[in-house]
Image (tube, rainbow, N blue to C red; front, top):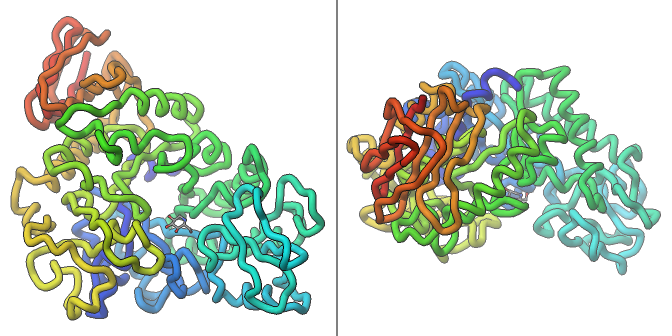
Amino acid sequence: MPEWLKDAIFYEIYPQSFKDSNSDGIGDFEGIISKLDYISKLGCNAIWMNPCFESPFSDAGYDVADYYKAAPRYGTNDDLKRLFDEAHKRGIHVLLDLVPGHTSIKHPWFKESMKPEKNEYSDRYIWTDSIWTGFEGINNISGSLRGISDRDGSCASNFFSTQPALNYGFAVRDKDWMLAPDAPPCVANKEEMKNVMRFWMNMGCDGFRVDMAHAMIKNDPDDSATIEFWKEFRAFMDEEFPDKVMLSEWGEPDKSLAGGFHMDFLLHFGPSHYLDLFRVEEPFFSRRGKGDAAAFAANYMLNYNKTNGRGLMCIPSGNHDMSRIAHRLDNEELKLAFAFLLTMPGAPFIYYGDEIGMKYLEGITSKEGGFHRTGARTPMQWDKSTNAGFSCAPSELLYIMLDPDKNRPTVEAQMNDTNSLWHTVRELIEVRKNNKELCNEASIEFLYAKTNEYPLVYLRGDRKSGVLVALNPSGKDVSCEIDISEGDVLLYNIGGKAALKRGKLTVPKESASIIRVK
Ligand code: NOJ
């Protein structure tokens, strides 16, 4: 694993909504460049940016029309290169979002593929041999595009019907039109995707978050062919770009890390219990104290034991596909949620705006294929100037409406208030960076995680010189027995301080303590 990844703390930027520098109502590269110092000040040293390539934006850019060209609304390729350079000057690494599984229907390859005459691109997408045959029951295919051209056949889609699936082959094949992963059109797609990666890595990007990484090979019941597929990419990266990384959207770390990804997420889908802590009716981090962390801990350890040493399992604060972490938690509760997120193994990922508790706007009009996700993609709230400092455009031009609440949180107000969520996040990042037991690869052991009980207690690092984290978001003081007898130095706390005496740990209500143990 590249050295830099061992203490990387990521900030996810949805470029549309971060900072608009040219007053067209949409964020852009220049805007991001102007906020790199902000990201550094928060303590983050890596960025994952959502897709920023030429696209008709039927799915916010996850429908690429040209893999080699930045979307003009964000700037030029040169501007993007400057973003990499400016980030690097500040010690920040930048991951782009690679969408290898599908293109836009507007991609020139797809336009060729739609033609009834056989050509180089005919089999670069997945087509049945008759318009009357579809893909029902085939895993990793979401639907089909039918009757869209004179070509006789249905074309597989990966997500929306504007996202035709590139053909990387089928693991199990029972029809003539199902190609093997080593068939020439599938190999050509794979090689082209490596070229796309080379192009941006040579320009300075530090790797990729890979969209729908689990879904490349179709009819692959145990994912073994998809794992093999990615191993080849990892070998190519190791050989040509050993300091760059791949992060998967997969949600099954044992599989993705076996496929060579350096990191995977625990997500709101796949076999993870990530949502149990924040986005359920009774979140563990609510002061009502009716949540449960035990199922999460058990599931986490299951995955952890299967993946330990192979790469990182990352828990994001949120992302552009789910409601915001602040949806069901207030700022004081969020401080404890961040105490958890920033003391867990794996690289932390902070979704832009979560560090100030930006709200999820329920029921707002969908934009560019966002639908229910749109409410988590609203413009960043920088200050109290026009459009919260996001853009000088007339407000009706804004990409997505701003949170209309007159008390909406802003970066400026929270940076000026040392008791704010922003400062807590910054301080927690500092504690993480200053204690090697809290770094991305250091081990974890849950010491107390009982069904429907508080606190949640875990140890990072080893028992002789570890760091203990005690979290009690509930409104009641609690205590528990753990098999570590004494605490030593309190490294950080939110709310009251936990005390450890002869194995008895007392944790005040609504508190988090990070303690060095001996
Ligand atoms: C996952 C991305 O995160 C999401 O935003 C997108 O709509 C789908 N993949 C399809 O590419």
